[in-house]
Length: 257
Ligand code: FPP
Image (tube, rainbow, N blue to C red):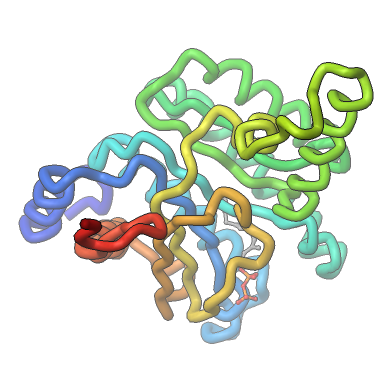
């Protein structure tokens, strides 16, 4: 059976079920474990990133086409990832460039709207132009909003938002006493997208690592030992099914009297 076109019956049934129960609007994923996946196979870390990219491609197609999820966010490169060996950073940058170049036509065809979260200025020129092109050319698509967090760090994002608000205060546009959640929210990279309902992290690590800290205030978290290259559509559906079993109270109580 072909991996992407036909789904086995039980997963098709599970998809139906999670769709009937009401999908989360926004799922965000910390794709972790590429290096360990490669090490286990005696391969260089770069082979793990290569395999991880294929996993991302498969999942994007599945989320948009089969699941019809409105928003998917993938943490591709953090502000801290620059500290990795230059060859690895260069490899990831090339991989992302190739990924966007090769997928652009498919995104167009499948109605994927590409969005980026993060500071694009330090990226290699070629990748930055490619990212700009993808964002521009897919801006009219609306089936799936795909947010790629690239050179993204949540604290940096919050600092940037504070600077933005401070500027508006200095110019007299905003009264400091009137600064509220909305004032910060509108200055974040995610101003146009809803907060994530579910954050998934692969590879057994149980932390957020500077990812969507403000936006995750009420987000459900799902951790799995699966290494990112092995994370398939079936596990995404299972994570969503588990999320649907949880009760989200947003700080309230179950039966408020
Ligand atoms: C995490 O594994 C992977 C990264 C930080 C690299 C970037 C992600 C990809 C290349 C996946 C493709 C993304 C897109 C949007 C196509 P790790 O290297 O931290 O693994 P380790 O913890 O086992 O060393």
